[in-house]
Image (cartoon, rainbow, N blue to C red):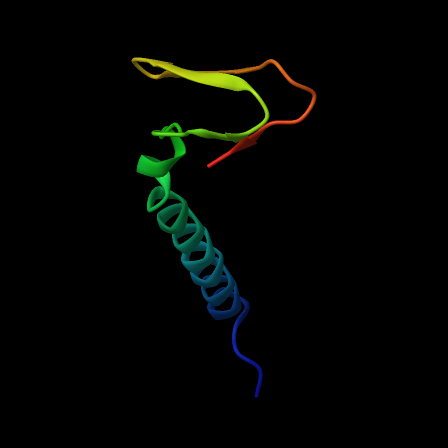
Length: 69
């Protein structure tokens, strides 16, 4: 015997809600990291410099190739 349509609709809506909430909460776990900038870099090859001021990190490259660690 088939289930009534309302039971199927409830099942589908519950499944959609579970997927939506799972995706929402998995993205919220990464939220603090989304706004983090790089810290403490050093130029290990080529020439250039790294400057930090508050939340802004500026990398100036003065050679064709530059390596940063």
